[in-house]
Length: 86
Image (cartoon, rainbow, N blue to C red; front, side):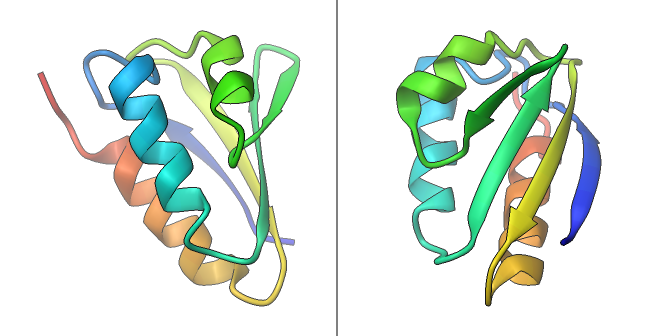
């Protein structure tokens, strides 16, 4: 089960628009993805779950992916979080 610790480089973190983009990206894959932050966990395919994490820019999250396309899903989600924005 692939895992990665990722520091969110997006200035706004995972709030509203970036969270929606993150969930949309996660839903392109069949793999299930969990996102963990400060002892809380959310399904990457749930906008409410991701928003509930309150992940700000600079936060370190853990991604855990399981399924057929786990490796490409992890790479895509990791790239998304590590791409700096204002």
